[in-house]
Length: 372
Image 1 (cartoon, one colour):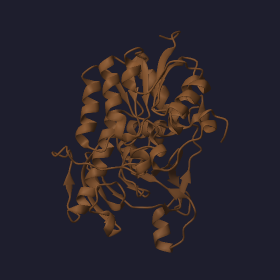
Image 2 (image 1 turned 60 degrees about the horizontal axis):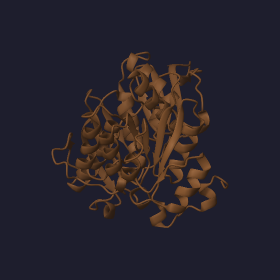
Image 3 (image 1 turned 90 degrees about the vertical axis):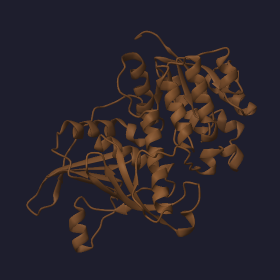
Image 4 (image 1 turned 120 degrees about the vertical axis):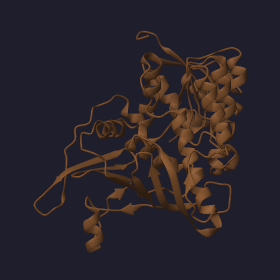
């Protein structure tokens, strides 16, 4: 398949869908053959922007005429399920979607099952864990390059736990090379706890299936390269901390696409930062979205492992729901997997319904790529 261009369809061509379009139109081994977009004005603009004439109002009408190799489902969450399942049933080789992939666990289950049962590769989307440097650092941890993992902490869970929170949940699952098996969570403020949306400041504990306990905190903590010294002295610097993972003498610090690794100590006991040479990679202008898309293409061609899968997105959603459930029950430990698959968590309006319907419509000129 090295000389063959993969045929790509973009389903949902809002701002993020257009980012997918820019990347897929840049790669030498992909071509955009169809666009499905409910907004007729934007459908026309995006088709003109990427030189695509096969334009459709939805995935179903598109799939009656064109079955691409790859379908990027970038609709608002409310409509992801129907598009993903339609693509799987039509025989698309690889489907990707974004976070959160559903509001209800049973819907996420149906999407994963529809792809798995038909041999369709189901990829995740625009998450920082797919960044080339993050993937490489996680692989080093998995290989034991820095010794046995002793502990970890998440310090930026975020207020939207099925949106931004999924970033941290997905990253800790990658670094731990495993799943969360138990959650205990405290929510804040009180009025956000007994709702069915994903808004809640969260602090608590994950117990991983490898036995490691991982505390997590709401908001952003700042820390130096030696958090213990900071706690003793009260001194901090302005280094944002997302996830720290440590072994006996090493520490990996992740914040979105930024990975720092420390190994050993100087004469004062302070950690020493390594000058890590990560593997260089192409198309860096699209950030970690590049890694997601190239991972899907590689999986189709070679059967290699995805940087993030639809299964990973489903697992992260389940953890987020368990967090809210624990807080609602009075900080009760919740064991995963959840037996009740009807649990629902509605994401922010912009993710659930799209920005067209929630007060942030895109102009025709922006869809054409003529404005910033």
